[in-house]
Image 1 (tube, protein in one colour):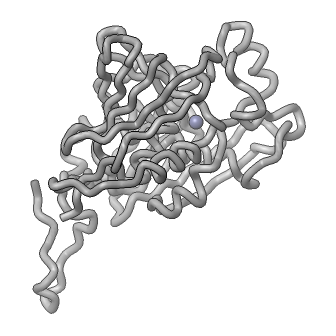
Image 2: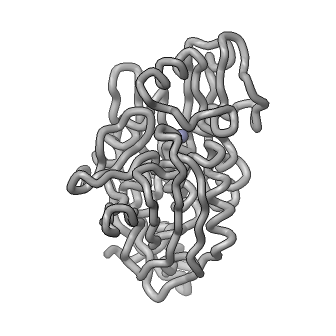
Length: 300
Ligand SMILES: [Zn+2]
């Protein structure tokens, strides 16, 4: 059995909201087993919004949650860091509706989690293991998940832009691979969209400090990876899939998807109860007769 995990101690940081441009205080606090990931608005009487598909709110540029009209926005990069570091239980305190954008990647959140430390708890963790494929498409956007012994993501993007005609990557997501290959990849935007967003009162906190900006022919800031864009899409997909509420074991394959499709798919996975099982061991493999010492995964 693998133990559930929380943080060893509370930790805080300050950043700005991408859309409001306002300063935000963020604290991550240890939580009891089976709490899950919960957002708490300290500016709204400590009202809590659990990070599950049941609290999905309207999706535009980022993933938002809301419950009883209290919302938390731009949750995906933080969720991506938390689940990839194996944090099952945590309370995320915010004094504003927006999770701070930091540098546009998940790396600052990884740093916070590492500084706080990870603590194993006295209760077993459950995994959602995909046993039959599930697929969803909307126009030319597609997403699917297939049975696999590990959590893997294949993502491909194609845009009408010389730098982004096609990028594709497959990665098995582990704590190590996420920290090295995915967490530093920043969000990206097109220069032509920035003015439009600003006119609509959005992206007021956006700058070259927290997003890769694509001009007509090139990028305005230095890239961290040649294919930073598709890596960031993997980061987003992992964060949005966290709303399933369990670590997922399966191979997620997405093409030209975005937050709306990722989160609709997370909800679909939970509805398709014939397509998965909850298990207590990540490797639900048949046990060879010669190794009786290895117990098979137990169904729960
Ligand atoms: Zn993102």
